[in-house]
Length: 73
Image (cartoon, rainbow, N blue to C red):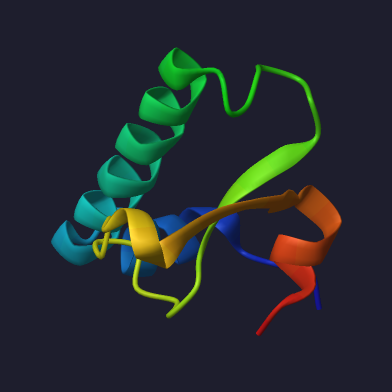
């Protein structure tokens, strides 16, 4: 059975909590780009060690490879 992306977006991605999480992740990424820790297209992600995307303390953030960060569960 193929995925129903429209229903998936309506149920999860457009929720208020998901929007706030996404905005927080984007904010941290932009700050890391400004400070020179990462660059656009470099294949690295900003990892939240405790898994909470709204916890943007410097001690909770680290730069990891995209594959390592996204395989972490």
